[in-house]
Amino acid sequence: MKLICTRITVLVLFSLLISTPRVFAADNAAITATAIIQAGTLTVTNQTNLSFGTITLGAGVNTVTINASAGAAGPVVTGTATVLGGASGLLEVSTTVNADVTLTYAVAGTEAGTPPDILDNGVDANTLAVTGVAANSTASPYTITAVGSPFDINVGGIITIPNGQAAQTYTGTITVTASY
Image: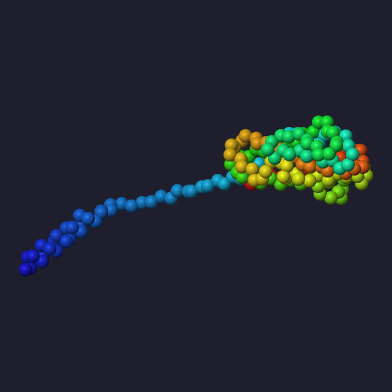
């Protein structure tokens, strides 16, 4: 029996020696991991100003609408007024990343203290309201999928001209903010 135990012990030891890898030397090295995060750029450039045209008033209240929600557009009159010229505004947006761009529209007159959404004549208290700018412009969010190519943002709106509105030139600024 001693001989059997010895043989089993030798076999077990031999099996352990064969199955255990031999290490003759060991070393290690470290590498540096780096990630550079760069913010994308977004550029908005004015190409064409929004113009409601030259309006000759008719009797009663008249409305001039430029609906550029589906692209460039001209004025449409409700009432008896006539319009010469006029066209939607155009901005170009470029970005270095594919993104859903959020557009916000804000209207301001040229005179200090003029309330929002008002065009003014820059001389006296006569003003003209602009409404529906966001609803009549390129919808937000706007998805940009081709990096580097400019995308058109069309801008429209509505002016309602009350009977007796002073015959003057009314101006203001529509600020379009694009962000992602």
